[in-house]
Length: 278
Image (cartoon, rainbow, N blue to C red; front, side):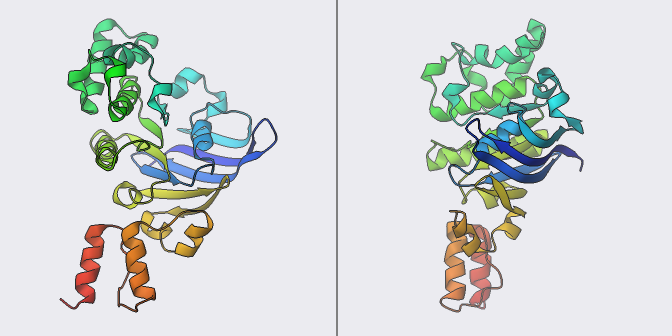
């Protein structure tokens, strides 16, 4: 599995001199679904913008398929990587769904027949195929987020950087968004990096997880490897997933014989059955 994005960042400061990111080292491999987990203000959005080439004044190196993004033309970056903003209203501007999704391919110089093919395929990928003529202002918040994703897929993006993709959605909307991203990842091979503070969604869907606190990566690995130290998570203003927190307390406070701390309901059920000796 080859590396698509490699970050080796010594420091990035905001214009007022505040250090926003420091000592960031991570690699995103082809086909991975990677999470950057952190509380509000931890630097998640800034890190995504660095990876997308939108922020340049840093000390260090960011590579896209082995090429330094600071030396790449923006067009060469945006043919591969796209950032989906937290608020879709910051990204959508056309009058209807089709026109907004078509903007990228047209700007790339695609012929109109190719534009239509790309738009139809992209909208189908995000379950919005029947909404092409619908006005942007008539969409729900979740639908707007899907159109943002479609706009990047229509440009041929192979890597999606998602800034809090489930923010502002109800619980069912959160789950549907995560199912959509998982499908894009598994079925279409789209590499995804997702910034989030939603710890309960992370273990169900992600391959790799990095915890960001005050602009520094403090922990990384699989969700199982990361969610082993509740005290350390509390220090960075995070917590275990609810089900894991329950089992952890039953094990350490009540002395119940759980072999491991599960992260999902299915895993918890198996641990409980085994602990009961059934």
